[in-house]
Length: 546
Ligand code: ADP
Picture 1: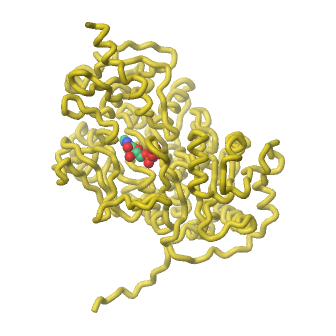
Picture 2 (picture 1 turned 30 degrees about the horizontal axis):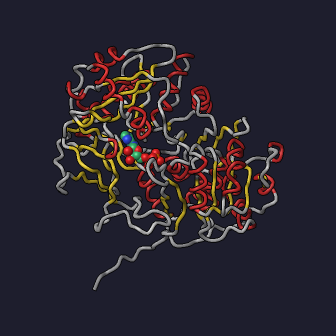
Picture 3 (picture 1 turned 90 degrees about the vertical axis):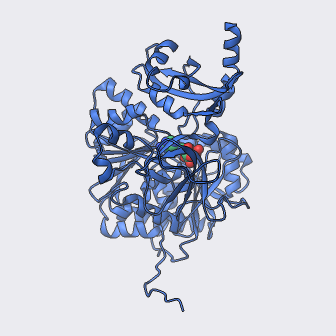
């Protein structure tokens, strides 16, 4: 007979993170740059009181168990209250990325069947445009106070009015930890966006795994600022990690420009941040122009796209900021791998150590990874052989919201769609997303490697590489380069800079200098669009030469 342990099975619930912070770190601050302009600060104790009031408001608006509560909002304390109130009461928080096209936002909100929609002032014009096409929303709430309520064609409720009329009398309920807590759609660069539906259990386990030493390593002495927005994979879990650890939480609101970011880092003493690489490109420009510093910042978690080596070197050498590269996806809550060191790697010669740590990192306990070749077998861990990256673990999706098909194989593995090589120390290096891999005469070329190389050129602001049709090789790399402000750069300069640093046959067949690179709503190069624009570029060039 199986003998079961005699330990309690308390459910892992999101509201308990805030309850803990309110009790043991009640005066630790949540500081926000508000959408209205000024800074706002309060402690976790007040955040919990207001979140409880918000539950009573949601109840009044008719939100019932498992209903979706939608948001189109920046990272602010009001959004933070929604994170806890909606999930904590047993409804589902649904964050939508406001940078998507109207048609995608309409699709996502209707597909999720949001019952109430909370909107920041910035995004009210979007909702005014799309409201006639929203089929499920019963109430629109402007996330502001009475004094800032806009004139609008919408029938808008006022967030602060609703809260001031509500009682804070509420006990967080206890329920099954497997219940859905929040919903987040991936950008869907191809096809419709897909809804990733997190549970209380997956969210809390992920936050514990992310927070611990050896991963983010967060303590009550830290001040965490997610620059990755709350609408992009839950700001990479920092709104859960901060209260869990009693760390200060700093929310940058709409201030995504270099000046606002530098200002809030210094003003609030931010020690740890997370963002996509383009944010740091913008920040560097501002810091270099003004000579200002970001001295409180000790660590930056960067991911979403590959981190160029030139970026992590500059952060460390010039600003004393240690870079943790993260590879992740919305489907992974989002933490996949992390480029933290180990004693074994620390003993390697400096150049080799830095090279390994510039990769996308290694799995943390809780997430299994495997790299599978075309024959279905795992590839050797030689750092060279590429294959498809599969993952499995308690914070990985097994399906998408309101889609029948399971997205995992019979053993529970999820195919990430990324192509990687893995080295003997367990660090992965991304070659490409499988749909972006360049196949030249049957051999693979990594667009990411070429991009990282070009960005190290002092005149280059951004560089994207795609595979385009070539009559002989099938596909060859083409690079588009956006120079830094006020400088010009030529194709020859870029090519001779790269020459000798990669195999000759990897060098792009063309480098096109552009004044804009198409980007996705989550700060990635829009490679489908770039491929479309330059589809015939090489053929035309060859014809001209002939
Ligand atoms: P989207 O931005 O399309 O909404 P995700 O944020 O889930 O969706 O994107 C996940 C993808 O981003 C990964 O599958 C991978 O291709 C890419 N990615 C994430 N982190 C990194 C990284 N550190 N280096 C390279 N690519 C990355």
